[in-house]
Length: 447
Image (cartoon, rainbow, N blue to C red):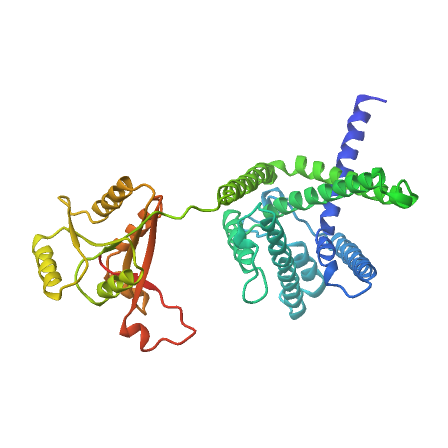
């Protein structure tokens, strides 16, 4: 055989593999049937197999029919319109379906637009498959600790709402990044689908092999049925693996390289999530003796002025019966601090008021230092910081108040031995029109 014949043979083989892989992409979507087997009526396996057979027959008929009409109509589709000979400079390439419909029914006719509308409807239903499958898959992975736990819970509409929202955001980003080009986006889809096919078929081969080697396999061990099932899955793994390799090589420069980089990164991310949850579980596991009771509880109430929320917080703190109770204010304005001390004495509030100096008019820092000083004096004690809050109805009302208490709470959360308690005060605007189903937001009082 001459070298030219060898090269021609390799080209024919490569062309055949390319056609085989391109034809296999038409089968993507059959995994929706396997994912939905639990939703079928009994007998589930027979009904799922019948549905799969109908889908395969319809797919073959449509594929052969569209291919025949495309050949008869001289449809031409290329990845770059500049490669078309004789095409005008402003030529916009249509899809195969659009070109076939134009040749059969005429351009701009009612049937032409009907074909386009039904094609769009089919694509919308095809996209719905991902919204059915991904939230369930993400819930399973979240239950095993490989994805955030928020994806595990069902929403109030009995669907995994967080998974749907996450998929919508990711899909929107991909559409924007690839300029809504289906030719470029399909490369990402094909690689992911056939990689999952190959891994699932390989996993079934491993499953049948372990079942055959199991010491308690009984009469089923080494039976012809298990050998046949393993052979079928092995053949499927080889076929899908060949398609995966061919598509990966031929489509690498067309966008498949993104999947090659994204999959290891996603795997590392999932392993990181799993490791984080494992570390958290280890830290949260109680010791043999449980949790030691604190020796004493020191209550601290930050105040800025004497008003109803402050008095309510002080009353609640006194009802807790802490070991010590102190009201703390930061002297950022001498006149306001003097007025606060005078009103405190006039009202005869039975709680000592401690004034903290703040030469740089910082509120959070002196309070944190005061709490840290209590912790240094009594490491076995607990400091409980009770922060007055009041509830407002409208979101824009939050903008009218500073968020010093919110910043204080955020800083105190990272201090060991410190407990933070919010004491809400409902304003009239929030209570007069509030219904039992409302969930008003809280705005922190200026402390």
